Image 1 (cartoon, rainbow, N blue to C red):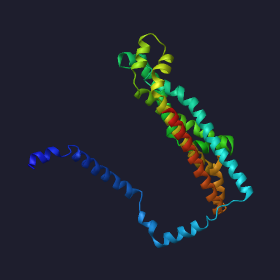
Image 2: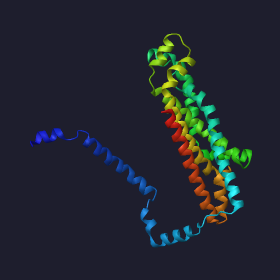
Image 3: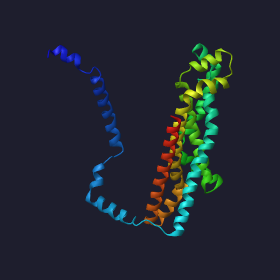
Image 4: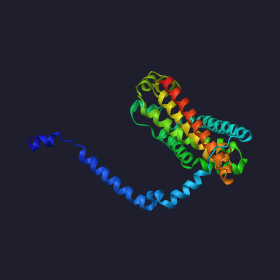
Length: 277
């Protein structure tokens, strides 16, 4: 084959991809050095022996009746914490996303350029959403534990605040990414913004909005366990207490229950996505 024909058959994007890969590796290496990443330490004989002794104390799982009763209560508490937190987050995120998105801007839909007044009103809301989601939920949980005391109330409020910022941002972006033609046609015909949202934007964005909301609910279930370590109740608080008492069997039972809880949440999410597809 002639050299020119061979050159034409080559992938024209091969060189840019190779350069991009090299740049990523060059940037990754200082990060690994900064974090002192040493995976070979896991396979050291002393490390393996230490981990073996530690894991041997986690068997068999605890199955006594009193512990299982507390475990069921903590599981329901964790699930309720995640669901209630998501419900409050939606109450905050939905109006915030409508205020932050350009999808319902009359000037942007009709002329292609948002007005200065519209930008002046949207930027503060976008800034508020950034503040809400930039502070981790565990920090909010620590704050609310001191304000309202130990228990799931602090976890509910922490999830509501952090996830309202996440949901509001993504909802606004989803509304801006769908086809704007139906909403534009409704506004041009004299419809209100409410009608343009419900009949022009929402039908096209409903599946993606629902899918992301269900994904965030799964994340809220996992986050509620982490917040239990700071006194927000649920399975996380049980794990913390069991670890402090060196009750490895109880820790394994709690982790297995948490695994089943995440699988349950995943199956519910998958079922609802299929029904909405």
